[in-house]
Length: 424
Image (tube, rainbow, N blue to C red; front, side):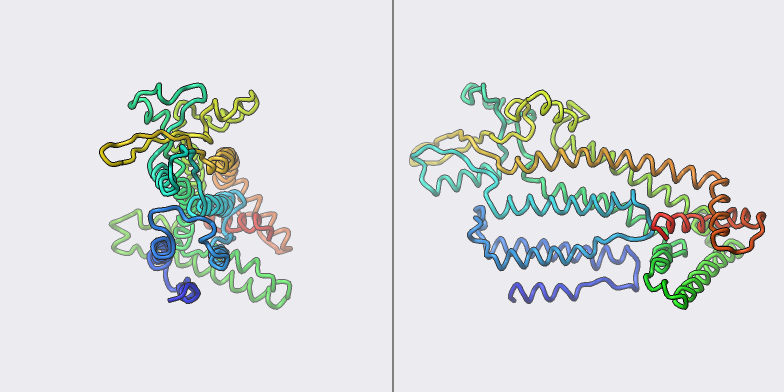
């Protein structure tokens, strides 16, 4: 089968709407990940050099164009939803897309170019150079300060945790894992809000329909939304009154039918976003082996301000050393060669940006979580918000009834607040 035919067949794998998010994790995301992984592996095995790095000349422009087009077509699945606020989108939308873009950029350099180039003696033939570069790339290199002689280092001193460089090979996969982590709280919120019976995403989407400018369309949409909210709230009350046998024995099953369930789950989702951002900062330090300092980004800025270059600081070194052996007739020759990690020029800028981006996310999420916690737990804000909404609608209302509305149906307040954040 040609590559064009394979890409066309992938269009048959699309989302359906007769299932929940757990089902889509199986038939959609899992199958697409497996198809993508098998395609990349097969392409490398049968169209590239399995044991050598593929040079740019062996990557035709038509293939590059098709790969870029297929990646762009996948971006539509990473579009924003309307059942959240701007801070949530910084996490699941912008952060995940930024990480995916960085992963693709680094992957092109690693698997489509020469991420590592080594300097060899003149007696090395071309085949030896290719072997040595591939060996050094697959095996970890180590960093040596410019004023230290490699020959003076003992064998056990060379590949110590402080000197060993192994992270650069795993950067694309690490970035993809981080992108998935930023999507998890969004999936959690979508699943729980859907299971509550109040389809917040569809309600906000209906309210944002551009055709609402037409008066008749607007009236129909308002009637549809009102009927849905009334039916959902009636269903909640009916479930709580009937007390199904299973619900009598397992009290926690009734939680999702209570008035505070949506509010509680949204606060939990906000907390998950915050915890994830903090964990990403810690994992970033662990991945880069900067355990001596918890403020990696500030250390890099300090080095820049003080004029400390990468040759002294050791962060993302451009030059490393690799040891390898060559079997010749009758003996084994050991060589130590100096290599240039071109990929670290990209890695340094990317990880410095990501570190400060995660710090910015933590700051924004803390403020957002405090705002929503105060707004959802203090009744005065709910009464004031619903009162203002009713006054703007020019509807006659009883001041006492608006309190009962907020007290008994707090999901309405969450919904109205999300509508406000979406400029509706």
